[in-house]
Amino acid sequence: MKFSMIHENYNVVDLERSLAFYKEALGLEEKRRKTAPDGSYIIVYIGNEHSDFELELTWLSDHPQPYDIGEEEFHLAFRTDDFEGAHALHEKMGCICFENPTMGIYFIQDPDGYWLEILPTR
Image (cartoon, rainbow, N blue to C red):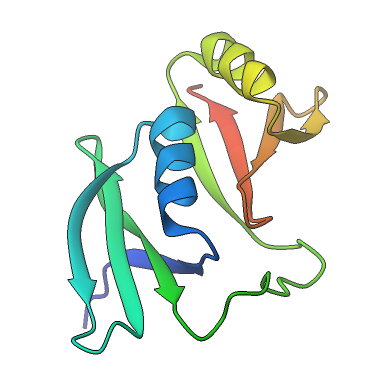
């Protein structure tokens, strides 16, 4: 029996803001979209050509308030081939929320508060 990881879901308050953030910060583009016939939800899968893994962003019409994402003890990790360039971009965007120079990593935070770990290619 084999399993493959295919996506992770984040619920978002402002779908367009989140799509813009993920495009600018991580180069993730919309791959496909599902919209409920009654307009109650929109699901957008984003990704890039470097991986089959996708991030699923879900917007729910009946949930306009920010999501309670706990104590921010979970995250999604991204490896980059240009760590210094990525750090400069994220610093310019003002989205770096935690750095660990000893480990050589840092985290950015998306508009809904989800943490994303940035690692260099080693």
